[in-house]
Length: 358
Image (cartoon, rainbow, N blue to C red; front, side):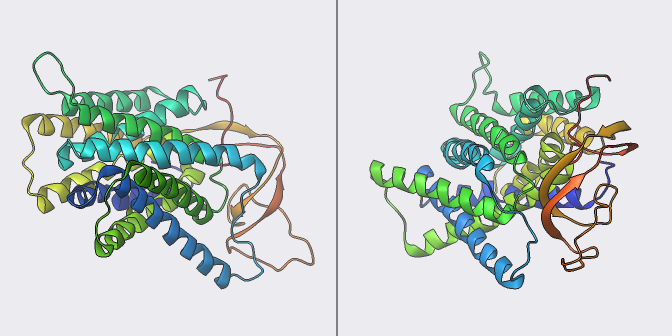
């Protein structure tokens, strides 16, 4: 994908790899867990791990703002993200994973990129050209092949649960995009602790049994890495790429999970798996290799987010009393003047302009 920087692309790919290993590892953990308590401890691990990182971040930068904190207008978006992606989606995923081979479930997770793109295009008005629409169609077709049980076009209940989880994560991704300029470590800490606490309370209300301390700790470790670090990197990628394109790159996650499932769980894929695989690969490639550039207008804007002064959009001056920052990452309220120019770009924090005239 040709955008201003390769850093957001690498962040999205690493986020995908970390999340990709969660499906087979969760499949192993389900031997000792019911789905709902496992969801609880995966997200508690993500929240606690992120909270620890937030503490380290504050200690390393005393008195300095390297990221922007959350404010009141962010609360509705964060609440929606917690309910959709932190509460509903993981429970549906684990219920579906309990009834579906991990290799198939891993590829079905590509529906998250489809849901993210469709919601971004239809509701949040991100740009969609023929290339992106073709990619969404290919991934959708592959998902149908993976979930088809044969006969009279019946669909497995487990596959439907995983697809529903992906739709909720698509909502989560688009909600989170609205606050992606804020501190990702803080966002994930709140999301993880909020979602994990909800699922834990639900576990206790339903009287679900919990495994030993060692297994609980292992689940939290998986959550801290595969959910916590992955979501933090995903939020950073959202800043530079927008929801649809970050979701497209995140579509590589299921291939990581599938490979690990075949090696770790010794699962033997069915014929439809191999039919769906090339469709998934071509669809993901079409989205990743998309290029977008044209003359566009940046309207006057004032906002706060982490940034540097080594691009075309942050040429503002700092006050005399402020410490020089050079190219170091820093955050403060700053103003963008109106400008018209042309370069390759994605719908990042500074390129969410209308394309109604195209």
